[in-house]
Length: 183
Image 1 (cartoon, helix red, strand yellow):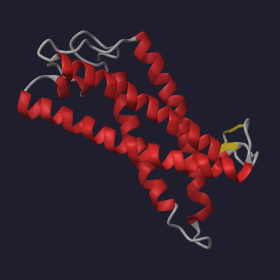
Image 2 (spheres, one colour; image 1 turned 90 degrees about the vertical axis):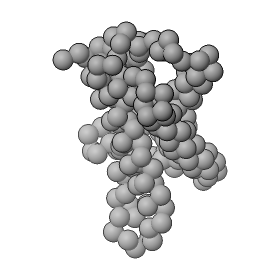
Image 3 (cartoon, one colour; image 1 turned 135 degrees about the vertical axis):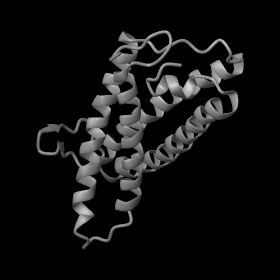
Image 4 (cartoon, one colour; image 1 turned 180 degrees about the vertical axis):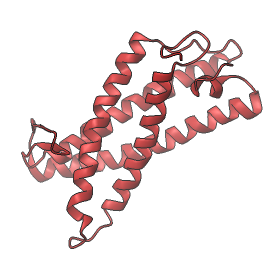
């Protein structure tokens, strides 16, 4: 079992982090859309946001681990068949995805702590409120959070379509490498 990345493919830890984050982000997006539609007297009106916040904090930790792992075990180099445009756009898309994900999590933190209360992560530990400015902070961060969430969904969908294009049309090893398979 290959845990670290090699020159030919991604290791199992990178694959696990990649797909785990992807599934979690789409789940959080769906949860976020659902919970803003709930009425005040719905049983999930208070529960859903607490779950959303807890998963968001854990996702922040996982993303930090992912960035450290990327430094410790660099990704495989781009395939020699990639054009200059493909290399640049792929690198830009990856860094944009990371940046947007961190920005989503930070704005979520600002929404959740605007009232000065810490975030309880499933009752395991609390993340204290550091910057509190009440309703204005929550409203501004909420608007940014929403647009960033849509941005990451659109960008990640384009990212997935690009991987499928590489697999089905270019017939190269891009997707196989991200699945941890031998090219």
